[in-house]
Length: 213
Figure 1 (cartoon, rainbow, N blue to C red):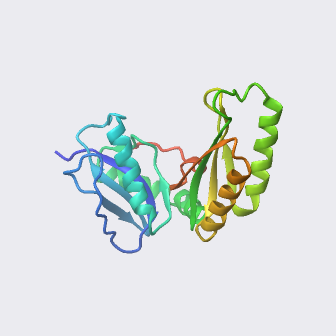
Figure 2: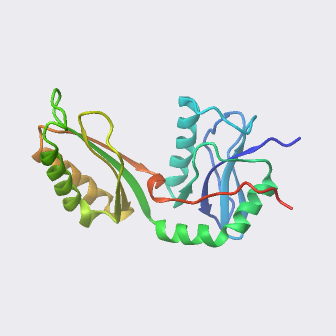
Figure 3: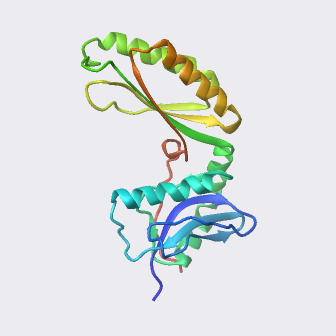
């Protein structure tokens, strides 16, 4: 009996993909299921509800980061599992127009994360107006070196910014330099800059796990 298939991402692929990266279960190879110019990057898993352990989450990210090196992708949420290759093909068929549209919009674009913290021992809530002023200024100065930005809720008392930025690959260096320029001007704050990542924060696709006819 065939094992369930874990789906990492969707990409454009007019030819077979060579994927040399370990997935959730290292002994099971990562491969691509192709349909009319699209491909789902998958690997077999032993259950339909993988444990969201640190090791599994890192494996999910590792596969997507490997694919991201040379192609645009639509990342799937952790835990996206289908019963069979027929179901994955049905996904590619039924959502082909949506995937094509999203891949077109994401083409050549990658995500970066930026978190900013107030000084140790100082709560961002002590001077909320100053924190808001800083955030507005940072976002304004990054606007011309990114395609889009998305702010999420801050975590803890010191975080004043928790944002993701969609950046053109050819503007990666400009974006990086701008972030470091801003950080150098605000040595009292702590900047955590991460990426590049797949565009997790800029994709919103609802999937139906329908059984293939």
